[in-house]
Image (cartoon, rainbow, N blue to C red; front, side, top):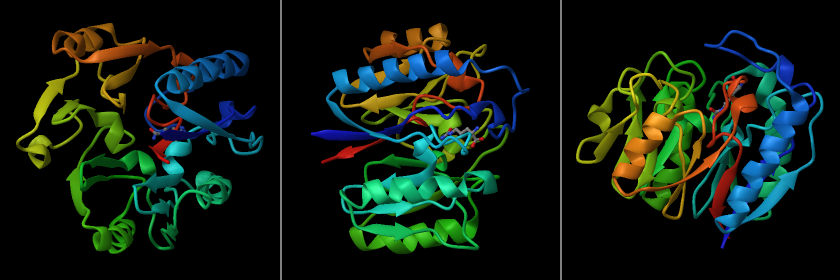
Length: 254
Ligand code: CIR
């Protein structure tokens, strides 16, 4: 059985952090509708939804992925790189305490869950603006006891590692090579995003199905041509806040 922690879209999402995008109006009502459809999709794929209460004063709080890294044996609560997001972690920690033993990234460490890509027993961590070497060392100290390797990955031009690379099937990654040094992923099959869809590398693999944004049809075709099953969701409002499909949930075995 899988659980998915999610959180209702904040009414203040218009004040979200933005790094690479120009601010556009976000329709909160539509964002909430899209978010409900996203949750429904996760539920259809076997996730029990654990929705956290809205955090009205925390604009980015729908992006729960950034607040924790959950593996089978433990959960590490993040200290997000953006100061405006640090207060998001407490309520996620409270929820996760019911499922896992907790460890915490502490100052001077910073890390966003969006920078952590787990492939089997390896945690790849993107090092750029949100996650720093101190955070990575803390993560390593927590997970190495359970035989997870932690690999630092160079990236540029995007917000998080998972903006540039995600797993779409066992042994296969979807990548935007302009943003990430793929030498770290030697031996794996790489599917490139379509040239016109630079934001298309963020896909959410649940079992053998990929949850994928409606906005990137060319890249979606590339996945389907390889026999990967894709379920499409419209996350256009979240995309204006630089969020994608992985960002809105924390999914783990229960
Ligand atoms: C931020 O800048 O932190 C948010 N506006 C977007 C976070 C998206 N999260 C993710 O990609 N994991």
